[in-house]
Amino acid sequence: MTKDEFYGIIKGVINIKGSPDMRFDLSKTRKRIGELVRERYALEKELLEHLSRGKLIAGTPVEKYKACNKGNCRCTRGELHGPTYYVSWKEGKKTKMVYVRQLLWPRVRERVERYQRWRRARARMVKIDREILLALDQMEEAITVSIKEVLKKRG
Image (cartoon, rainbow, N blue to C red; front, side, top):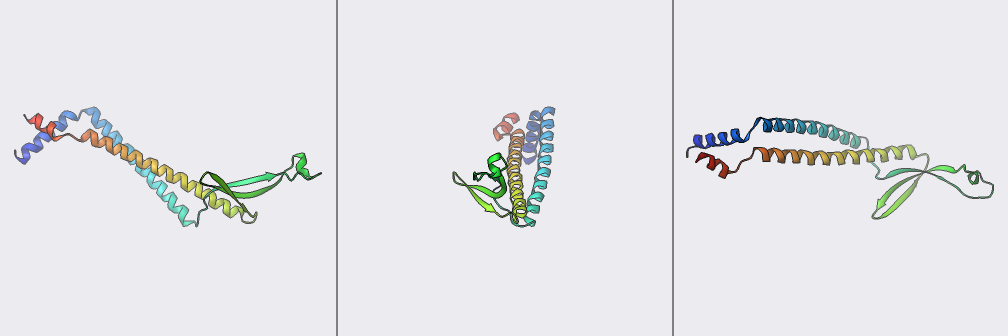
């Protein structure tokens, strides 16, 4: 079999398999991949911006109000003391907390909130990557034929 005959058979199989509906689906899939790539690019820019603004602090910002329960204190009437500031995080199954002085709180809170945005953006990137790979796998399945199918059409 010559190279031209082989490619003619391949073209025939693709034309048989490639109905207008399939071309539309492939086109739609390519368009979706393009949208996902653009979204992923925007997330990459966001992540790099977080890095350029200094260190991140892993955890969750916490503001607590407490009662001291001393005699005639206002907290016994519902006016709690505080706020006091903490950053909490998980170590294994335990939640840990560290006290943050009021003077440092605005800077610490900003870094913790940037860390949380970083984690959300990163998680979205992972989902986008999975969706792109799934779409590429579907495209591969739609456009791939076996050599047996090609040779069967020849005979």
